[in-house]
Amino acid sequence: MKWLFAVGALATLGCARAGGGGAAPVTVAPPAAVQPRRPPDPLEASFRDNLARARADAERAGWLVREVTPIPEHHAALVVYDPSPETAPATRVARLEAVGAGPYQVVSSESGMVDVVKTRTGALLWDLRGDGSKAVVIHLTPCGANCGVAKPLVIELTGHAFKAAAQAPECPTCLDDRDHDGVPELELRLAALTIAPCSRASCGPSSALLVEVRGLERWDGQRYSRELPVLRPLYAERRRQAERDAESVKKALGKSRICPLNALGVAARLYVYSRLGGESQADALARADRVMRGWDTGPCSTEYDLLAPPKRWPALRSELEALPLPALK
Image (cartoon, rainbow, N blue to C red; front, side):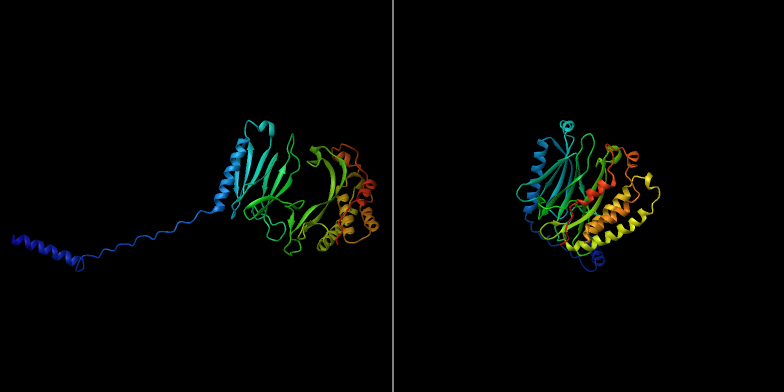
């Protein structure tokens, strides 16, 4: 028994030396702190309920969800639907719904094609007034045997709720802050001269051979206005460009053989921008006449599939003279 004790003592001594003179201390980690449970976000819950309700209502009406696009940093989304196979042959349309949080309300629209338009930076929300407002722009394109021209629909997002815009520009995607004052200017069709009705295959969705003059509007605090003095210098620059273009048009060769779309466009722009700059109607018309000297619309009949004889310059000039133009007060 003595030798057994000796062996045990040596073993104990070896363990003590190997362990640095005693048993290693055991460290017990403190229990993890219990994180307080965050209360549910009532806006998020409301949005989810509204979205589920909107989808269920649409599905009962024969629509199938194509895409749900959330609005970043908002409790809101855009839902695009396609008709179900049972209704598709009869409807041939798409449906869009804008769904937000709060009391249940859905802004919806139907058309042959529905496209959500993004800004140049890829964002979904547009500031069309320059005051931090938020809006979604939708292009609705009617379609039958052929598809027509897209029409814009502006839906405003206030907080986390959508509503159809009470005031919207003519072309919400045609915006640019040209004078760098923080308020965007938006382009629109200020004037148009129709030369003749035209086949769709030849002239496109507008179904007319025409020239147009582009104008500007912007938010004035109450509405989108075309009659603002701040637009005057922008029109002055456009007039100077039209004058430069007019010099080129006057020198063109082969005037009797070419449909004068470019010349008509320059003459119309020069007249409109001169009038907006304060020039008299007689002087502005004289400028347009000089641009059109030697040109004739007869060749348009051979270049395009027209459905009626083209109007000559005297008739188009009378239409130009009768155009209602904004007064830059």
